[in-house]
Image 1 (cartoon, rainbow, N blue to C red):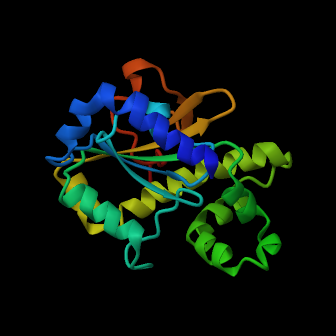
Image 2 (tube, helix red, strand yellow; image 1 turned 45 degrees about the horizontal axis):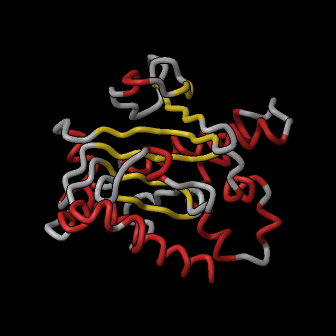
Length: 221
């Protein structure tokens, strides 16, 4: 706790003064560039990762960067998404998973969560992710590779869940919103974005990901 208190003093003494005009301007309201949905994991810092200032990201965090389908839970996630799109008018939503995700590790080994019923119940919103891994990735037996695949598939599942939210569906319909799936590898600093045409996550480089990455590429019927 002492470190947190010392940090506040350092912020007030060394940081606030140098950015006082920015903070004073925020009193007039917020106009974030994007809604950034990511995990609660303490190793993830969205503003540091994207080099954004206060007021530029509207952030939603929870265990596993999960977006329950609309109506499944009347909670903070749905309210935050609705407010971001309807009131703040964000143009982009990013769902950002990360390497070595404990929530996804728990999803792969549900018996270990027997004494954590709240966590297990929450992870039920990633049931589709687990089914995809069990049925489509049975050939991957290496634990690390299987976890990575789970993290990536979970990002795509949550993007699909986002589409069930009426405000998101309406904004997508009028082309006022783009969805993006990212995975952050915090131990190397790399960020991978999902490219629908390639059907895989590729390193984000420059402006190559300016176009929306909204859904997985489906085979022709």
